[in-house]
Image 1: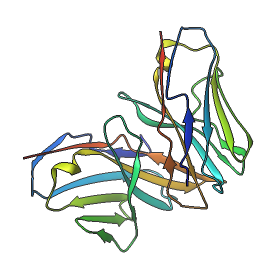
Image 2 (image 1 turned 180 degrees about the horizontal axis):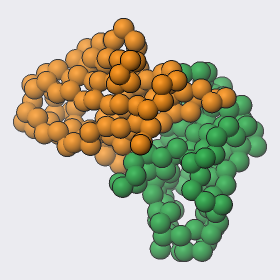
Image 3 (image 1 turned 90 degrees about the vertical axis):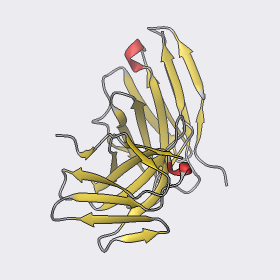
Image 4 (image 1 turned 90 degrees about the horizontal axis):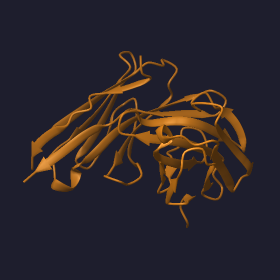
Length: 113
Length: 111
């Protein structure tokens, strides 16, 4: 069984550019989470979806961030325009059912220069 | 106040030692509790769920105190391979299950 798949693994971009991170959750999972991890702030929940519907996006830092889940097998996190302070590791995770454990992807290391 | 708080450590212990980590959470409606482990430059992975009656998995014991909103993890007979960051995780229902991670506690086990 394939796990959660994220792409790209690494992204280096210049300030002002648009960045799109992609995630394919585990088949059959109905919840999807986007987290951002930095040394200073740890793992922050940005947004999560349940059955493809955004439930809570209160963690999205600014309007520059947006996330979509057009179907059960795909989600994107977009940053436009990107800024150096967006540099972090972005993790996608999925789970099945209430109170179930999360399975994480390998993350995308984003560097905004 | 953060929703989930942990002592960041680091904890430096010799092999064979027993070490305990604590965690507090602020949302009294929290329903599920977990400990995750994260190795350097890797994704977090579930270590164990935490049940109200307490539970054990080999050298690892987790405890939950709902009245005090407190979770603990005890590691006995520490191994070098236990060196990692341990993340306390709390989940509560807001229409889906919002899952919040603590900042993590660093553990270094030395020979």
